Length: 435
Image (tube, rainbow, N blue to C red):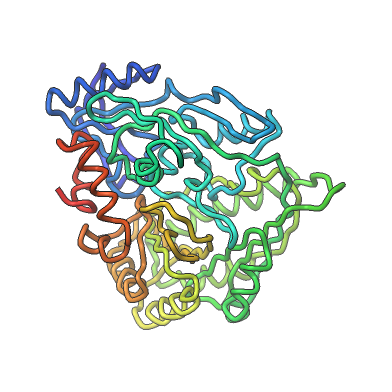
């Protein structure tokens, strides 16, 4: 045990002087959790710290699961892969590839741990596909009394429905079993299009591709579209060349983008022109590569983010209302707005529970004020029953979530049963779930 200072990636949350525990087995986790609970201490398992909210902020005791961060079994026939909950997505993707397996869908970064990703409802895009938590078929959960629960659709099914997206409030997830698929290649097609064309054909684009998303640059009429589709038999990989990849993904997307954002801080009046120049500089590219290499990219420019899930049929209207507000507000916004889709699922606190979903994510550079922009966005999506990503900035409380999640009280009942003394609580869980 040691004490340390913890800080999340975005710099929005921190904690000082917390006890740090580094177990190397589920038995050690169980003993540590039981001891903390008996001492009346609050305990939090912490992943990569890539959430913007305070969902993983430790108040007294922090558990790091670095010692539980490897694949322990992989069955190629069934696609079932069991791994430690502290496994990072980048390490997981490389490990799955060695077994000729892959995740069916991923988000656009791979910095998170697998447990952190599912606990906050992290997702990618695909009209027929769910978030990362929908790919979990079993999990191992250590509860406040030191018990180890094995959960699946058949074993402790109510806990399974609650724990796949739980914001860490039910216990410490120590292991997960994934339903993977045979490794596959994706053809990536990226091209700028007029925003009006993208919005007018949104359903066709979303339904006509395995994975579709677009990025709209405020103060412009241009959106960057991304279409990723599985290739046919006999098609081999043809990845982006090293030079083109470095120019597009490192120089332009990170280094130059950081520089233009710093310029935006000093000269906000230049933002519309900067965005217009950036949108004109976009060029089409097409390549074929391993799925996880297409899904995930480097994001090194620090920002603040809010993302809401709305019924898919309202996505276009939300984007139009948001654009109208931006035009009226006088705000200067250098970061693009990201739009993705997902299929309905049955996980109680999944943002896609019970409805086909569209995701709208807004961002602001970390050195620029974001409150006015994020507040206006929250008002717009609220009119459509928007559900915020559990790890991204929002102001909602338990009463709001009760209205937006049909199984919210069922989730609270499971929490009351597993953690009546609130060993796994922190200020954020008290905000979103109540005391």
